[in-house]
Image (cartoon, rainbow, N blue to C red; front, side, top):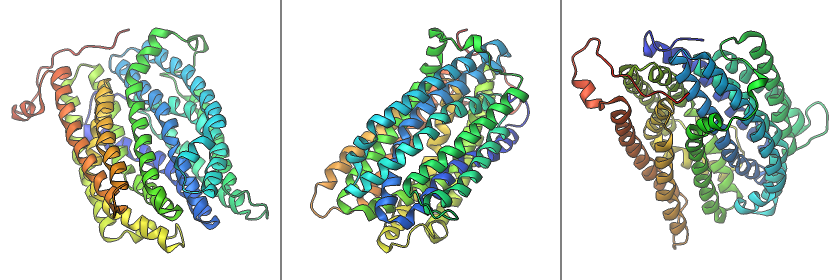
Length: 468
């Protein structure tokens, strides 16, 4: 366990960010590897895999429920020096992870084809996406166990083991993808099924390694089968924090579904170009997201310890770091997008869409970075309802106008991207306002008053603690 209630906040952020970023980038690289090798199968395969990946937002919603609830409540307990509560929350989260994993497998078997029919442009894309989803779902089901373990470790300030496991899993996936997708060395190509199977095998090996590490090395939070029996009061503690954060991913699923629906009239090449551009955008946003995620446990432990000044300082410093990072990637996306998108498709129309998308949407990056930071701070404070409010605002201010515009004469796909910039900017402004209000309510003082105070130690009123 690492005490985040003392020492330099910037040093804590910078120490935790690289392992978190490496773990997240490894996940994104898995998806990009799938797209890279699937691209040789044609636009329908690329569009199918990209559209199927959007269904991952639904699974990620459940992952967020577990991850955010675990990080927030375990971090609060660590800040209070309440090891018993930290262990109880962790083991109740383990029980939820098994339930959510089983639900994922059942839903995949029943709904994959129905989902692909609702978003795909043609029958070939439907088939490719359905096959990929069915082979990918074992990986997504196993992710729940990995999420709970990694979240508990992150709440205690430990991030390196989960990162190392993720990186090794990516290496396995990269090695398996060309073998299973294209038949390298075997002469037996599985196509899009191989992409999903490679990921599932890699995640299964990664899950096993993380379990072995956790049982042998971790001591602050430990598996306790006696605490796996569901205890409704403590499950509700996890869900009260986690469900609004999961709802944020549900909003993103709706958002992405609207994009695919609006682009369906432009054909598979347009959907494929968007899928490539969206995956790359997600990759270059990872450093800023990693900074924000590092700030969450720091804020959580300090909130649990009653140190409101360090909570506010965590937000200010993480927001500044995130903004600098996002400006750097914005410059690259504007002036050298070819460095980011080279090699993903030989189809000129597909890549034209990807270049256009990345150049326009990258204008969102600073606003998106602030959204990441605010979201992580709400998680650290243990109240994620404002995150859901801001995400829902973005979805509704985007989705309805986008669908309406798509029915108008002379509609161009870039209208969708410009509308996204407006909706994201609105969400960033709303998130900052909601966080300011939350600070005033939970910490007793707005940020501008903090800035006006003289330097030096300040008395901090005790904060309300989570119920036992």
